[in-house]
Length: 253
Ligand SMILES: Nc1ncnc2c1ncn2[C@@H]1O[C@H](COP(=O)(O)OP(=O)(O)OP(=O)(O)O)[C@@H](O)[C@H]1O
Ligand SMILES: [Mg+2]
Image 1 (cartoon, rainbow, N blue to C red):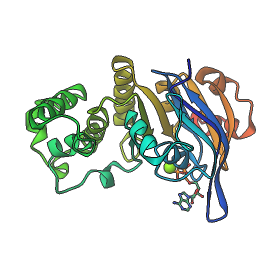
Image 2 (image 1 turned 180 degrees about the vertical axis):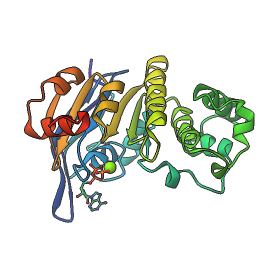
Image 3 (image 1 turned 90 degrees about the horizontal axis):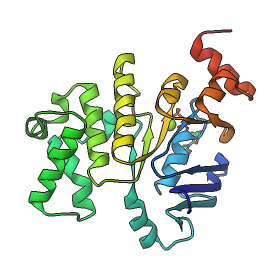
Image 4 (image 1 turned 60 degrees about the vertical axis):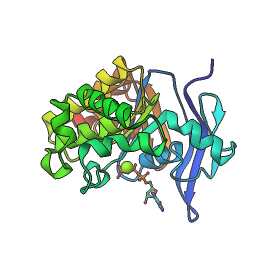
């Protein structure tokens, strides 16, 4: 069987400047993988290329065995309904003038899924699954009437409402304080387990990465420099850059 997602030698070049070079990764159905690395390493660009928001300059991206780079646009768009990208900045990504219920329903409207009644039920279900209860109360609120952690839960509810098989979570905890970060990451792991969801979790934070995923990939300057089990990478990093990240995270020198 082919993996859920398989990127092979993916490269993205912006105006002659390489942002991502030769990145290969595979994620099996239901598997969670963390992509870590410093600012500018190319992590978001990998996620955006997978989601089709930036074009791959070369290489292939297959989802469910369909080559998204080679497929006609209409096909790749349909196949990509099986994935959802949570953006790096949850504050900017929730439209301020829309009520939570409409924000969460929007992916169903865009993809023309269901009718008014079934959408409303799906919204309440999704809000319940991220524990924004009473769901009907939260559905009627505006983003500014929520805390940062609640806003990020709305982003997850919105991501899950169409039951994607792959969640691309780009720094889903940036802007939250430490205890909330753990809470959100644990919620994401729980949703992955209970909803058979595969996750690509992008983060700066090695400890959070290891908490949420069994496999870690480390990027530096657009390339993957290390891949391994989280325990292995944290206890015995083979690349100098990873070792530096690990000692920065654990405070050892
Ligand atoms: N649309 C774009 N046009 C031009 N250059 C871009 C574009 N998007 C990203 N880049 C460049 O590509 C490189 C990788 O950026 P990317 O956003 O993928 O890094 P990142 O690892 O997500 O960083 P951070 O941790 O800060 O979010 C950077 O040098 C960035 O300036
Ligand atoms: Mg980024």
